[in-house]
Image (tube, rainbow, N blue to C red; front, side, top):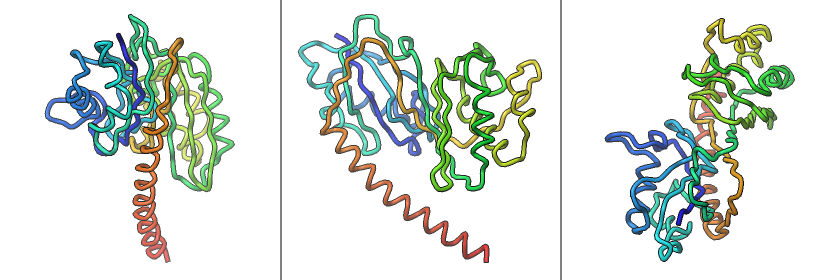
Amino acid sequence: MKIALKLAYLGDGYWGFQRQPDLVTVDCRVRQALEKIGVIHGDFCYAGRTDRKVSALGQVIDFWIDEDKAKLARPRCVNGRLPRDIWTWAWAVAPIGFSARWNAQWREYRYLLWHPRLDLGVMQSAAHLLLGEHDFRNFSSSKVDTVKTVMKLEISEENGLFIFDIRASGFLWNMVRKIVGSLEKVGSGQKDMLWFSNLLRPELNHGAPTAPAEGLILMDVGYEGLDWQVDEYSRARAAAALASTVQERMAGAMVARTMQRAMER
């Protein structure tokens, strides 16, 4: 039988998701956990390759397993073998022929950008231009198969923190980060709307700025026909671990903020 798992992870301690020689990636840690439990046969498929320092809430993997070992692939069993910054929190029985990558109907990312004084209205107007099907060649480091459909691009703001939610049929390499980097330029007044709209003209071959990887999260991947079973115990344990991480990192951020304000006097 085939099992699908939803994974969440903090990406700052890893060289991306995909396996790389002599580097610690999320893939290798998940693979080690499944091998220790004795449930994996060969390779597994994953929904999307996230880059170094990119996090995920809804990464999806699938793999074959003997039916009599299916219970060993449940989230609370797998989590016991994973590092403290990787969690699986939901599972589903996948149909024969299912692929976490090729059966994905859409992927959704969230980008968090701390940049007070950006013009939210201007960025929302620019973002509207990206909805629908376009050639995103200028918004990517990839130059192959660059026509994609953006289904949603919403921007909100909470006390200087700008939240970008982007859903599309597929994403090119660095596409989300380049979209955010370009919207930031428009929102700060460094670039105008004509410059932004020209990024949708691939024949002009303009380069778009790339926002840092740390702010990016793979939030969810959409499929048809999967009945996800959420492991509430595993989700609660992950939430508790993340609360501890938030407390630690907020303290560090406030130290830097205090020093910044002192230097600006």
